[in-house]
Length: 499
Image (cartoon, rainbow, N blue to C red; front, side, top):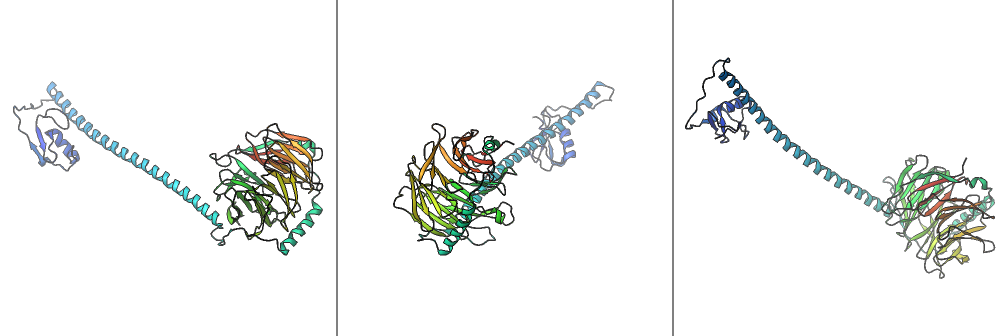
């Protein structure tokens, strides 16, 4: 027999009625006096619960003599040993208990982290699903109440009221469209990269597909392959709003240009999911945007998105071989046009600065010019290579630039309907974006790199090569002293003249 506390053969063995364990009487009595429990089972235990065990042969410990003798010293050491054994046993029990509690706490912590991660994932998925549903239904903020999901109607033409508005705007713009350049060619030649903001849009579907500039508020609207549009503040150097709702990549984005009148602009986004969304800003100027209307009348990817100079209407073009004219306030479609000459869809679009002519680039190497009032084709420019990927009208209204699937930009004279010049970029290069400055003096070409040309002489003033992937969109600032560009490297770049 061995004592359950000391592990040695007991001199006066006793057994506990509660646990059935054998103890040395003096050790267990001391333990009961201190704790009142069985040291093994933890049950309440008293001295009366101990039964003496008779053993043969028995040993009787001699009575300890005075402390002056060796036997007395040994007795004292024995007592100290007994105390140490009791304390060690207690520490072992506490150690085992703490280990169990720690193990249980770690398990609970791990389980809680897993549950929290799962709940956060479900929350984010629910938020995204809610945003998609709201944007698809065209809901405004909860307090707004009114929604719209507008399908295009095949209107025969514009009403007299709308025509009168377009013609009045044209009369005003025709008198003011001749503007002098605000910067000299020598200044443009000093263009360098002022700033770069990387990491816009998701990395899983990288790339900025389109951008537009609200110079008054210092905001850049970008669309991406990740199905989202972002509002980037140049002053704060960060994304201040994310517009979610499309189910496929964004193909074009645009501000309406109302910031000067309204303080905050409306945003427009077109997508490969066949829809166009009209986003309105919150009244508190907190960069909150909600989808006021969803135009869902096209049956294929929307490839053109152009705000009319009145800032009250927008035109769209699609791969379904149709283009349409919409009211921004109501989200209604005022006009839809199709042509027997176009069967494989439109690949680009642009408004003439006066607002009565609308140009569409086709996948069959041609540019069609339409009278918006009557939806009749008034001119056709052919001879491009492949689909017309991008096109734009000069601010003076006399020139049009268009680029196909090669490295050439064709400059057309709208009065003679002839090509006046062809610009070439890098060998084997591509062209994805064209932009005039507001004076019509300089033409920016983006693709493999960014180049700026001077009108009439067609001298190349700048060649900017800082991008690490193709440039997909670019816009000049209102004075022409800088331009912003976005590309497939997910970076927003700002180039400007050197002071």
